[in-house]
Structure formats: structure tokens, C-alpha cells
Length: 480
Image (cartoon, rainbow, N blue to C red; front, side, top):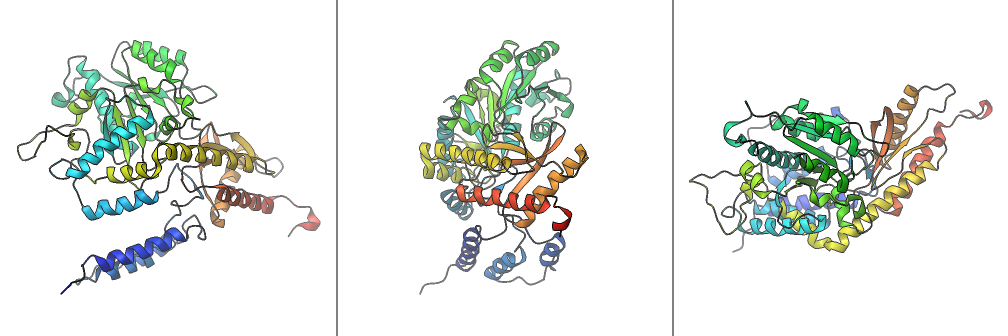
């Protein structure tokens, strides 16, 4: 006599709701429609004494969140460098939850441990990094930075006879981080988490192309008086996708004994593209690198990757042994390289994404996103009432909407720019995020989704055209 699995009803309902969401992305508004008050009213139900059937929980959860989910999984989401999820990656992520493996050790998760070994090798090959670099699969680029910078802290202080893992930072030589002034806030947070403090991070002025100049960096290195220094370089900054000149700056930093860390949250993926890898020439000579999987690889959250050229430093910063923890000398034990102990088997989704795409597919996806970004920016910039601020180098561009009223001030232009992008969001056809760059509010165009195509670009440009047409001043006899 067969029995129905207790998991089947809920999982079947989840599948139906998931497909309804994914299949409806082309028809739905990109931005969430439900208000904060509405969502609170639906979700803030009393927690009853008695439970309810799992399938009912899933049905009610889907109903309560209706209109409160952004369409970031689809091709018309252009905000915050957010990718979608490839079919194989999404399905593998569901398997990850079903398998429920603790990806800390081989003993806890044998197959997952091997998956991570393989995935790390594939990623180093795709990203053009040293084959013998160590790596960690983290929750995102934030923790990838923290992992890599922990290795840097270990190595730099060890050179000065200080064991930071044993003795902490009290009394240690002060460590500085030098970077172009367009660095991401995750660097400041990593410095805080590692006990260096936000004051350890110095932003240096960049040139008009958003790049750190060698003379500027050299002057800062000389001013560091031989103390331990991490030089942070950009492979795609958050506003314009600028890439530093690695072939020039990395050898310079090394001459002064600095550790070079590369923030490649999305831009490091340019190394997987035959067309764009020239932007990263020399990047493989850095000491550590960080990037995201849930951006340009298009895997579900959470997924980040840290790579370190000096494996011993990363292992000293992360590993821990205990009698109750099984250890296998014949395999890479994930806990020896990651900041977490108990952790999700996040390598499974990345493995599946890479298998689905292959090297050619990754290359094509990057080029497709960059082409869409160029088409979006140029198409919108051609409309009346639009100022082109930055044409994409990769997949990031900036646009501004000057206030059409006579005598409008810079503050008016800033306000109008926010209003225009807000009107596009309200129309439901696309979602853009705004930023302040060099003192001006701009609409940032970011394309990072594997599904974005010509039709999505055309819909977004048409949506901007409609907003700007409605806003155009009319003669008095035509005013409505």
C-alpha cells in the first residue's frame, strides 16, 4: 500500500505558484504594487496555537505576498546590478533545499564538497585567475571581500611578525586600505567586520574615466611609510563600470609591499568574454579577488566567490580544527576556507549554471547584457529631454533628465531625474535605480539578466518616451 509523501502537496503547490510567477513576468509590472500597509495587514496574522496543512501555508503565503514581489527575475529589471536565475540554477537550488546538506565538511556533505572543488576550478578558469589560487563560496560579494581581506590581514601582519589569528589586533601594526574614491560600501563594512575600522579606508581621487592613476596611488603608498597596506582596485565600479589599469597598478603596489585586492562584484566576469577581457588585462597578478554569482552568473541568492593567490594566508585566517569535527585530508574541506561553518550548499546552483551555459554561453550572456545596456542608454539618450551622462563601457550607463522649466536649478534637475525614473516604475514597464554621481542625480542603467533581449529594451525605451512626452511643456491652447 503506497503512501503519499508528506512533502508532495506543499512542493506541488510551490511549483505551481513559482511557474505562475515566472511565466507571468512579461505581463506583470516590474515593480511591486502592494503597499507597505497592505503587506503588513496580510502577513501580520496571529500565530495560532494549532498549525495548518503545509499546502495551505504555501497557498496563503503566495496570496499574501501578491503584488509585493519585484520582477527582478525578468528581463526588464535594470536596477542595482541584480541578475535573475537560470533554469538549471533555480532547479538546482530547489534540490539544494531538498537535500538539506550542511556544506561545512566532506563528512556532512560528500557530493557537495566535490561539487565545490569542481566549481572553484571552473570559475578560476573562466575568470582567468591562477589555477593554484584558493577560493571560498560565500553568501555574496560582501563576505567574499571579508574573506579575502581577512587573508590579506593575516599575510601582511605575519610579514611583520604578528599572528593576528592568535593575538588579535590590539597592539598590531595599523593596516590601511587604499582605493579609488568610487569604492563600494561593502568594503567599508568588511573593514568594520575585520576590526580595521572604516577610518582605515582611504578613498583617492580618480580620473575622468573613474580610474585610479598610478601617480596618485604611488603618492599614497609613499605616505604609508612602509606600513601594512591593502590596495583595492576596481573591476567594474558600481556607477559606470570603470576598470582600473591593473597591468600598471598591481606591479606598482607590489613594489611597495602592498596586497592587491580586486573588487570584481560584476566586472570580473568580463574576463570570461573574448570581447571585453581586454578591460581586465593584468588582473590575474593581484593577490585576491571577489565577485558575485547572483549577479552576472545568474544564480539564485546567496552566491559570492572569493579567490586568494596565497592559499596559506586564507587557510590560516579561516580554518579551525576540533576533535568532534571529522576531517578528510584527501579533499578540500569547505570550512577551512569559508567564514561560515554551518552553511547552505550554494555551490550546487553555481555548478548547474556553469553546466547549462558552458564557456561559450557565459561569453554570450555577458556580451548580450552589454549590448542591451548600450542599446538602452543610446535609445533613451536619443529622446528629447534626456542628457547622456555615461555611455556603457560594460553593462552600466548613466542618464539624467533636466527639468524642462525655464530657470530650473541643479536641484530641480536632480528632483526631475528622480521623478522621471519614478514615473517609469509606476508605469510598470521597467525598473531603474538612481544614484548620485559627481554631485548629480542620475538614472543608472544596469543590465545583468540572462533574459534581457531586444523586446525588453524596446519596451523600456518606449516607456521613457511616454513619460517624457507627457511631461513636455505644451502651448497654452493645447494644455490639458
